[in-house]
Image (cartoon, rainbow, N blue to C red; front, side, top):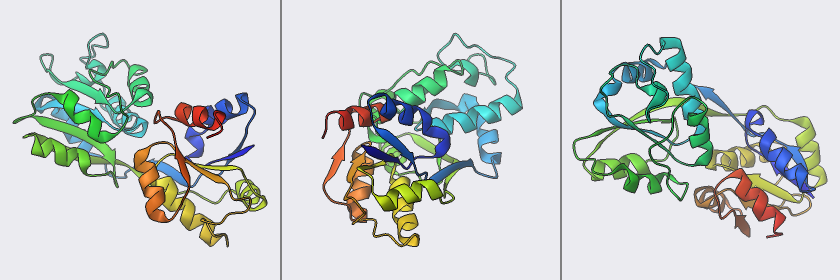
Length: 261
């Protein structure tokens, strides 16, 4: 079974290896790339004033990577890796800063950098984070996010009386066309996987530019989505008969495909 992987090439290997381990043939066809925004001045300023925030909420591994790259460049003279805030506690020793992660992959990325998240929701979507943040009245929440991030979480924080400080720290851009992946897509694959709304949007655009109808592909592949937000984006784009992972991770996708769903 050939499974098309549309996520960024730099983030695809573990997914591909897991598919190969259960006998599937992974096909790399990245449709997006992740890049830090050119101007990170706002993030640098927020980090220099980290004591004003009650929470930092990470909604992706990408956000973790950019933030900690900036921290590394700034230096961290007051590191305290054994405390929950870890490396983020570098401007005030008495800060009560807490850290939330949207899911296990983001939490793992933080832990690799010495930060144990104070909260990870059971459902890996932004809306599920809010209940774990407690009383937000009058409190500031730092949200280092994508340029095109959904507005549900900052809206919910504001409605709860908090101050959501969104900072765009990375952008999603269309990837260069992968000729081998395109050849496989034209000859027919069994499954196309989507791991974010941006993979849906860019896949549709790239397929059309390559002369394909993204909704009537060779081999009539199954469309598999990592979670409900991605599923909704795929449905709105025009895809039908979708399957969605119960656990919103690439491991969840592997489990879904292994079950034959």
